[in-house]
Image 1: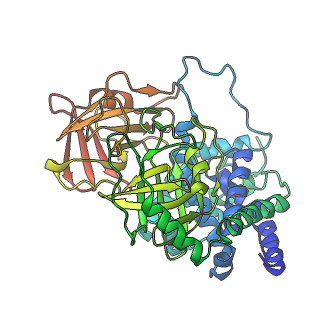
Image 2: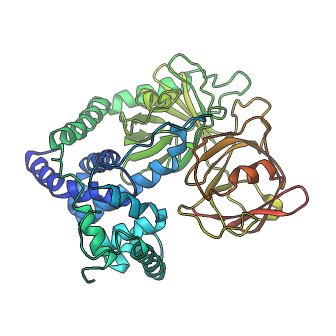
Image 3: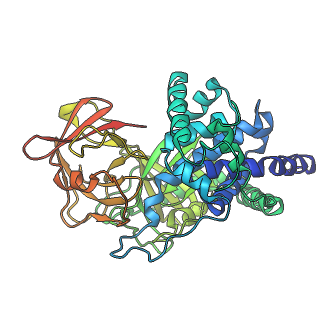
Amino acid sequence: MEERQRAAYSEFAVQQWRRLVQAGVVLGLDRHAAEDLAQSTLVRCYVKWARVERADDPAAYAARVLLNLHRSQRRRRWHGERPSEHLPETAVEPEDGMADLHAALAGLSREHREVVLARVHLDLSEKETAALLGVRPETVKSRLSRALARLAADPVLSRTDGGPR
Amino acid sequence: MNGSDPGNRLRDLLERVPDTPPPVDALVAAGERAHRARRARLAGVGAAAAVVVVALASLVVVRPDDTTPAPPPSAQVELAGRWDVVELRDGTGRRIDLVTNLRGRVGLRFDPAENEYVGSDGCNAFFGGYRLEGVDLRMQPPGATEVGCRPDMVLIQRLPDVASLRAGGGTLTVLDRDGRLVARLARPLPTLTGESQVRTIAATKLLPAFDAGQTSWPDPVLLQLDPSPRGQPLTGARPGDGVLWADTGCNTTGGAYRQRGATLRARPGTLATSLVGCASEPAVHEVVDQMALATAPDERTLVLRDRTGRALARLERLY
């Protein structure tokens, strides 16, 4: 990669990093897994940098890569698990300040998280979201409606003070 | 959206995600490694060398299997598209048992427009560039995810050794520089075409329309039936044997199944499951245990039934 391209890529990575990590969180990952997913996404973008640069919306391209990576990782998830007769003695507690977020998102299905990611976090249009998720715009609308209804019913997200519990 | 809108509230909460600096240098270094490896692999593979390799490859006697003769060489190999890995050997020639490790689909997809491949070893995803000239195939060392699995990433490790291809009998035989078998590839089996020809169904969704009495779950329930790739060394395997896995969004189940016509049975003793305690979990294990008959009302739907014909689950093809 030429120096100019490398500089452009570095700038892109800096710009997209936090948004991609947050996207991973919206998809239900803890912060560390979300950072891993963001890293994998940006490495993939590096390898495909010429294509990313040519894209009409490089940020949307990165989002699509992230979503595809997450879907493929999720399909493989069970391979990392092993049967066990015993449950862990203690659950892993979310980090300070993120418990509310994880609790709210835990009530959403994968499809709902994905549509929230696209429409709310990435601020994509209905049509762009439909293209990203591979569904019809009507499906986007109905999924978003149901997802927001679930979030609205969440005791944390329905509060208006904006402060932590 | 106003201030109490759940979307806005969600955005507020997302601001609490710690703002760590991006590891730009590490990202650039990882990308560079892939590029360097590709250049090193492909540099020096000139036309003359390609001719020599083609000639050597055509002379090499290959024994991919003690009972399976090597397919005849082909000058024109149609590589584009999806392939299942149906046999895999490590660098010592040891055969990797793909089925009884109960791993996911092991396969590759070649994109000739970009000269790139992507794939999965059933555990990790990988991608890279390739060059095909006649039967001479060079594969760039892949970039890959690094999920820990057993056995460790044999396919990913072997890809850079690939030197040539032979096509025949509907399969591709992939050889290393010494003419030793790396892998045999086969096109994925045909998709579901009708009740009398139920062969396989890919990822499916367990619809909430059966006895569990619950109409929705937080996560989609997935049941995937993968046919045993042809030539798999599964003990007692016959065409129609395969592996299944199910994901309830809480626990996962894996095992082997047998399919004879429309009869679909989990192989006794092969099912394994994780044991995470979750509320409202779909009874996938019961479905898998009891399934005896598969009927296909249409190409996108498969109904699993027990021995009495009672519907246990209605599966909808997702992709």
